[in-house]
Image: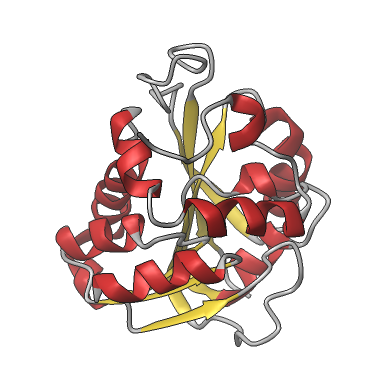
Amino acid sequence: MSVGPQSIAEIALGTDPNANKEMYDGWAQKYTADVSNWGYDAPMRVAKMLKEHLGDAYASVEVLDAGCGDGLHGECLAEVGFASVDGVDLSTDMLQVATGRGCYRRLAECDMSQPLSTMVDGAYGATSCVGTLTYIPPTSPVLAEFARVTSTGGLVCFTHRTDKIDEWRERQDGLVKDGTWELVLETPPLPYLPKHPEYTDKVQMKVCIYKILAK
């Protein structure tokens, strides 16, 4: 039996980084097994979408896996052909598991609710964030930071739970209005944790992709 979190309340503790770090540190060894049992396919779904929207040169694009967790999304990115992926995450134990997957160029511990101060402007051709924005306040600089570390013409891709996405609209639209990025894709609601007894089809997800405009 898994000892990982089982309820919606446990999976979505809120935006306190200390509480979320503690939860994911304790979940690291069981995470992939648990979410797979709940029908979670967002890591592969997003990897395929990113590849499709980057076009023929995708394999040479350097990707930031933002909120990489135990490396599930990074492994999916590698499986579809991305050759250079870096990862950052809040959880030390998750990063240790991610290291063992062997799919990352570099990994670093990072609280994404704060500025990504160690990353230079335009360092990546794509930034991908799967299943993580739930744990970060929309008032944080995270979206602007994703745009900053992504090069002109590059893509920023992220998922939102359908019960959380409206909280982010003002920030996303603000970056459109100020010319930082333009919307490439917002999917209709897609399955999130369809086999989880509390989620089923009540809570779904959307994938958003934005293209960075000239800086």
